[in-house]
Length: 193
Image (tube, rainbow, N blue to C red; front, top):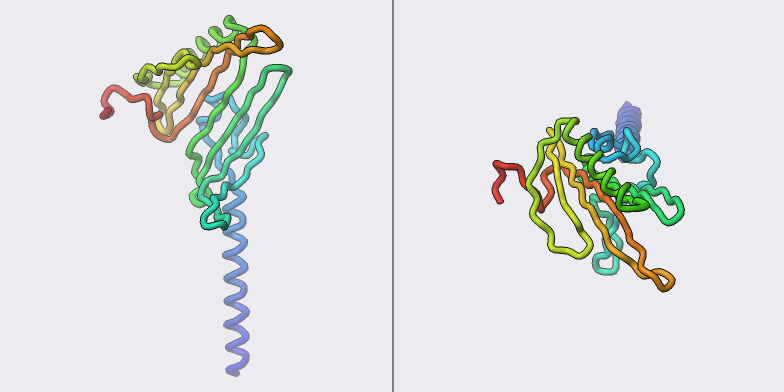
Protein backbone atom coordinates (compact mmCIF):
# COMPACT_ATOMS: atom_id res chain seq x y z
CA UNK A 1 0.00 0.00 0.00
CA UNK A 2 2.84 2.41 0.86
CA UNK A 3 4.44 1.81 -2.53
CA UNK A 4 1.17 2.61 -4.32
CA UNK A 5 0.83 5.83 -2.29
CA UNK A 6 4.41 6.86 -3.14
CA UNK A 7 3.89 6.07 -6.83
CA UNK A 8 0.62 8.00 -6.83
CA UNK A 9 2.34 10.96 -5.13
CA UNK A 10 5.21 10.90 -7.67
CA UNK A 11 2.81 10.68 -10.63
CA UNK A 12 0.73 13.54 -9.20
CA UNK A 13 3.86 15.66 -8.71
CA UNK A 14 5.05 14.96 -12.25
CA UNK A 15 1.61 15.85 -13.64
CA UNK A 16 1.61 19.12 -11.69
CA UNK A 17 5.10 19.96 -13.00
CA UNK A 18 3.99 19.19 -16.57
CA UNK A 19 0.92 21.42 -16.22
CA UNK A 20 3.06 24.23 -14.76
CA UNK A 21 5.62 23.88 -17.59
CA UNK A 22 2.83 23.99 -20.19
CA UNK A 23 1.34 27.11 -18.57
CA UNK A 24 4.72 28.89 -18.50
CA UNK A 25 5.36 27.96 -22.14
CA UNK A 26 1.92 29.20 -23.18
CA UNK A 27 2.47 32.46 -21.25
CA UNK A 28 5.80 33.04 -22.99
CA UNK A 29 4.10 32.65 -26.37
CA UNK A 30 1.32 35.09 -25.49
CA UNK A 31 1.80 38.37 -27.33
CA UNK A 32 -0.47 41.13 -26.03
CA UNK A 33 -2.50 43.59 -28.07
CA UNK A 34 -2.35 47.35 -27.54
CA UNK A 35 -4.48 50.30 -28.66
CA UNK A 36 -1.16 52.09 -29.10
CA UNK A 37 -0.57 50.17 -32.37
CA UNK A 38 -3.47 51.89 -34.14
CA UNK A 39 -2.21 55.34 -33.13
CA UNK A 40 1.30 54.51 -34.37
CA UNK A 41 0.03 53.06 -37.63
CA UNK A 42 1.75 49.71 -37.13
CA UNK A 43 0.25 46.27 -37.78
CA UNK A 44 -1.69 44.70 -34.94
CA UNK A 45 -3.50 43.66 -32.94
CA UNK A 46 -0.69 41.67 -31.28
CA UNK A 47 2.96 42.54 -30.62
CA UNK A 48 4.15 39.78 -32.94
CA UNK A 49 1.86 40.64 -35.89
CA UNK A 50 4.11 40.93 -38.98
CA UNK A 51 7.16 41.14 -36.70
CA UNK A 52 9.93 38.80 -35.55
CA UNK A 53 10.31 38.64 -31.75
CA UNK A 54 13.55 37.86 -29.90
CA UNK A 55 14.40 37.86 -26.20
CA UNK A 56 17.32 40.10 -25.29
CA UNK A 57 20.38 38.77 -23.45
CA UNK A 58 23.14 40.50 -21.55
CA UNK A 59 26.78 39.44 -21.29
CA UNK A 60 27.71 39.23 -17.61
CA UNK A 61 30.98 37.69 -16.50
CA UNK A 62 31.41 36.08 -19.95
CA UNK A 63 28.01 34.40 -19.67
CA UNK A 64 24.92 35.35 -21.67
CA UNK A 65 22.01 35.80 -19.29
CA UNK A 66 18.44 36.59 -20.36
CA UNK A 67 16.98 39.99 -19.56
CA UNK A 68 13.30 40.79 -19.11
CA UNK A 69 13.24 42.61 -22.47
CA UNK A 70 11.80 41.02 -25.61
CA UNK A 71 11.88 43.00 -28.85
CA UNK A 72 9.73 42.44 -31.94
CA UNK A 73 11.02 43.93 -35.22
CA UNK A 74 9.32 44.45 -38.53
CA UNK A 75 10.23 46.50 -41.58
CA UNK A 76 9.21 47.22 -45.12
CA UNK A 77 11.68 48.59 -47.66
CA UNK A 78 10.53 50.17 -50.90
CA UNK A 79 13.45 51.50 -52.90
CA UNK A 80 15.28 54.21 -50.97
CA UNK A 81 12.39 54.47 -48.47
CA UNK A 82 11.79 52.31 -45.44
CA UNK A 83 9.18 51.75 -42.75
CA UNK A 84 10.44 50.07 -39.60
CA UNK A 85 8.47 49.05 -36.49
CA UNK A 86 9.68 47.91 -33.09
CA UNK A 87 7.66 46.65 -30.13
CA UNK A 88 9.28 46.04 -26.73
CA UNK A 89 7.67 44.01 -23.99
CA UNK A 90 8.51 42.61 -20.57
CA UNK A 91 9.21 38.86 -20.84
CA UNK A 92 7.73 38.17 -17.40
CA UNK A 93 4.59 40.33 -17.30
CA UNK A 94 4.13 40.26 -21.13
CA UNK A 95 3.24 43.95 -20.89
CA UNK A 96 4.16 46.19 -23.82
CA UNK A 97 6.58 48.85 -22.59
CA UNK A 98 7.32 50.72 -25.82
CA UNK A 99 6.52 50.68 -29.53
CA UNK A 100 7.78 52.80 -32.40
CA UNK A 101 7.52 53.31 -36.10
CA UNK A 102 10.12 55.15 -38.19
CA UNK A 103 9.74 55.83 -41.89
CA UNK A 104 11.11 58.02 -44.66
CA UNK A 105 9.07 60.06 -47.09
CA UNK A 106 9.90 61.04 -50.67
CA UNK A 107 9.85 64.83 -50.24
CA UNK A 108 9.07 67.77 -47.96
CA UNK A 109 5.44 67.99 -49.13
CA UNK A 110 4.68 64.36 -48.17
CA UNK A 111 6.64 64.90 -44.92
CA UNK A 112 4.62 68.02 -43.95
CA UNK A 113 1.31 66.48 -45.04
CA UNK A 114 2.00 63.34 -43.00
CA UNK A 115 2.75 65.41 -39.89
CA UNK A 116 -0.52 67.34 -40.30
CA UNK A 117 -2.46 64.08 -40.75
CA UNK A 118 -0.84 62.54 -37.66
CA UNK A 119 -1.66 65.61 -35.54
CA UNK A 120 -5.27 65.51 -36.74
CA UNK A 121 -5.69 61.75 -36.12
CA UNK A 122 -4.14 61.87 -32.63
CA UNK A 123 -6.27 64.86 -31.59
CA UNK A 124 -9.43 63.27 -33.04
CA UNK A 125 -8.68 60.06 -31.11
CA UNK A 126 -8.76 62.05 -27.86
CA UNK A 127 -5.06 62.65 -27.32
CA UNK A 128 -4.23 65.46 -24.87
CA UNK A 129 -1.38 67.59 -26.23
CA UNK A 130 1.81 67.53 -24.13
CA UNK A 131 4.42 70.27 -23.95
CA UNK A 132 7.78 69.05 -25.27
CA UNK A 133 11.18 70.55 -24.67
CA UNK A 134 12.78 72.16 -27.72
CA UNK A 135 15.55 69.98 -29.07
CA UNK A 136 18.74 71.61 -30.29
CA UNK A 137 19.71 69.37 -33.19
CA UNK A 138 20.72 69.66 -36.81
CA UNK A 139 18.65 66.52 -37.54
CA UNK A 140 15.47 66.94 -35.48
CA UNK A 141 13.04 69.55 -36.74
CA UNK A 142 10.25 69.12 -34.15
CA UNK A 143 9.05 66.99 -31.23
CA UNK A 144 5.35 66.78 -30.31
CA UNK A 145 3.42 64.40 -28.03
CA UNK A 146 -0.10 63.41 -26.98
CA UNK A 147 -1.31 61.62 -23.84
CA UNK A 148 -4.04 58.97 -23.97
CA UNK A 149 -5.63 57.09 -21.04
CA UNK A 150 -3.01 54.32 -20.85
CA UNK A 151 -0.12 55.50 -23.01
CA UNK A 152 1.53 58.46 -24.76
CA UNK A 153 2.54 58.98 -28.39
CA UNK A 154 5.45 61.17 -29.47
CA UNK A 155 6.06 62.43 -33.02
CA UNK A 156 9.63 63.33 -33.97
CA UNK A 157 10.27 64.94 -37.37
CA UNK A 158 13.74 64.74 -38.92
CA UNK A 159 15.10 66.49 -41.98
CA UNK A 160 18.72 66.39 -43.04
CA UNK A 161 20.95 66.01 -46.06
CA UNK A 162 23.33 63.22 -46.92
CA UNK A 163 26.01 63.17 -49.59
CA UNK A 164 25.42 60.49 -52.21
CA UNK A 165 27.38 60.05 -55.41
CA UNK A 166 28.74 63.55 -55.38
CA UNK A 167 25.55 65.46 -54.52
CA UNK A 168 23.45 66.17 -51.44
CA UNK A 169 20.14 64.41 -51.02
CA UNK A 170 17.50 65.52 -48.52
CA UNK A 171 16.12 62.91 -46.14
CA UNK A 172 12.60 63.37 -44.76
CA UNK A 173 11.93 61.04 -41.81
CA UNK A 174 9.17 60.69 -39.21
CA UNK A 175 9.20 58.68 -36.01
CA UNK A 176 6.21 57.83 -33.82
CA UNK A 177 6.98 56.40 -30.37
CA UNK A 178 4.45 54.92 -27.95
CA UNK A 179 5.18 54.85 -24.21
CA UNK A 180 3.32 53.62 -21.15
CA UNK A 181 4.10 56.90 -19.39
CA UNK A 182 5.01 60.30 -20.77
CA UNK A 183 8.10 60.66 -22.96
CA UNK A 184 11.13 61.93 -21.05
CA UNK A 185 11.23 65.24 -22.95
CA UNK A 186 7.45 65.95 -22.82
CA UNK A 187 5.06 66.75 -19.96
CA UNK A 188 1.36 67.40 -19.48
CA UNK A 189 0.32 70.74 -17.94
CA UNK A 190 0.09 69.41 -14.35
CA UNK A 191 3.21 67.17 -14.40
CA UNK A 192 6.31 68.04 -12.37
CA UNK A 193 9.32 68.97 -14.48
